[in-house]
Image (cartoon, rainbow, N blue to C red; front, side, top):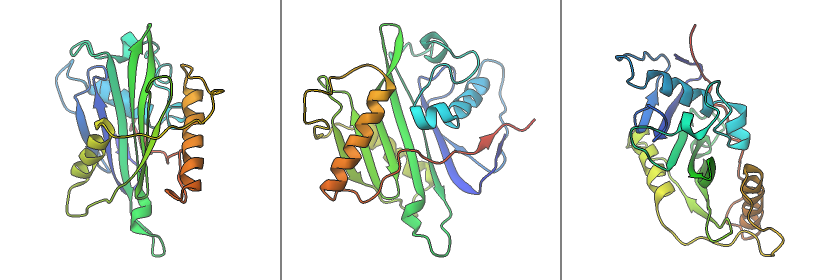
Length: 224
């Protein structure tokens, strides 16, 4: 497995098939070694999903990789959890005229099993030094902006663990939609609309000047 870009990159999984839980650093060249049924194939499928257009843009998790078409294909049979979380965090090397904090990108998405479908439950997006969080709550998708400083004194995994802690933490969120026309509907399109609405509100309140919802590709590929 080869990482084509010179960047710090870590992938995250929790209750995803047979992949081990936690953060996994991806180097420029990687070897997966282990006995049968230890999660090697699941880990490669995780990276394929994270790097797919369907997940990066639409946050899809099922139907992205061949053979993973239903919650039964995705959810860990060991933990028997009703939730699955996947994500990544990367740090690019800044160019001579680029701010170092502008090269931080990451996203974590938690899906919850409901009526035989894996539906998005909460999303955390990191771009630069700002974090946008959105979660499902009482028929709305409230949001919250937070600051994030990448600490060079820590390892990349330790910085990613800080992002994970924020993703799963309980905080006070702000209402995203001010009218009753946006009744919550299950589906990723509603979440994408909520992301845009939250960014527009953040810009109006000067909580954020620019924010990228379409994060860069992880650029990981499997060597043949």
